[in-house]
Image (cartoon, rainbow, N blue to C red; front, side):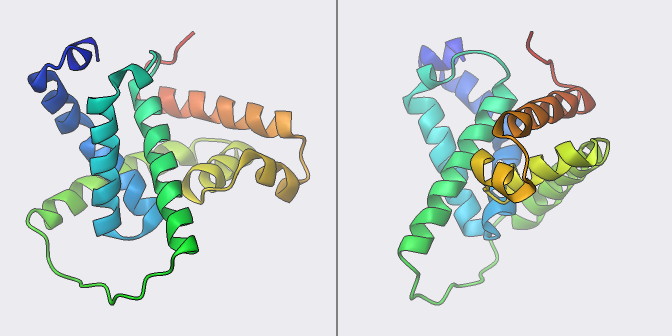
Length: 170
């Protein structure tokens, strides 16, 4: 990220190559639309290039996943506020099959890691990250204190990072 901050195009391309499938996969899972997932992917990497200082250290994967989730939620909110009147075109995209295969591989790896979590952590993470439910809403739905919801999510994310072979900060 230091090199990206210094406008090193090669460093940016390396980050894109390493993480675009993850970003696309999260966007696709949340939005259910490959075209919108591509738009989210472009938005995330544009943010990374134009505002690299937004990443303040820690786990890059966690940060880019959170940025992707937030961008996807913005798209969902925007679509809810302005329903589309156009008929979507289902045209095959160049490389779409290859991207779909890699997204499925990444998604399967994540599903396997999620399956190792206790149900109280897994359920909150799935609802919060993939369905866009806020922590406060999760607390209300599960009749659980907000602090407990946040702790379970944080603990579950730490376990996921370990299961996926990520470095856990602290």
